Figure 1 (tube, rainbow, N blue to C red):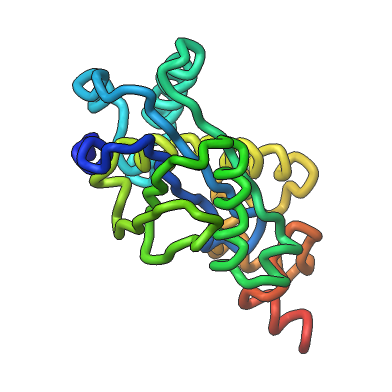
Figure 2 (tube, rainbow, N blue to C red; figure 1 turned 30 degrees about the vertical axis):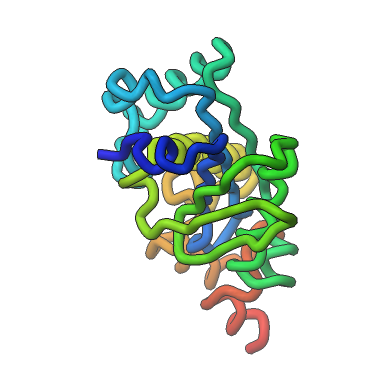
Length: 207
């Protein structure tokens, strides 16, 4: 289970960063940063948090509401950042992910913060100290919390988009390339929310 041991050892305010949406064929990439103002709630928090991708939707929503209550009580601060489909196609998905995370960091206005990033890349942003952690949401509660918030936010966004584009199942697949989703891209063509540099959309456009 994730805990606050990494954060505690750093001795600085820590912003845990994670993203959701690098792999889908449609929709933006969404990043979240989460800063815990103290680490006393670890035991209570462990009941709610794990890798957002492994939690059921119901458990994730419960965890998100818990995090919202912590924010309301001023125990945590979190912010979201988005890179849209046009930015993903122009920059590539990794650079767009970094851009979304930089937008998150700017919202905190905490120049002395230490950045803990889920993954195997660094932002090299301004003068921030940073560390990337593979499978960070299994190790750091700051990253795990950011993962849950980003996942809930992006899933809700894709459900809203699915109301206008009903043929692609985004309310269930969140833009990922399920069999039905891909079949309907071939049948109906891509929408404005599809990533034009991702296959099979790229080949479809250029065929």
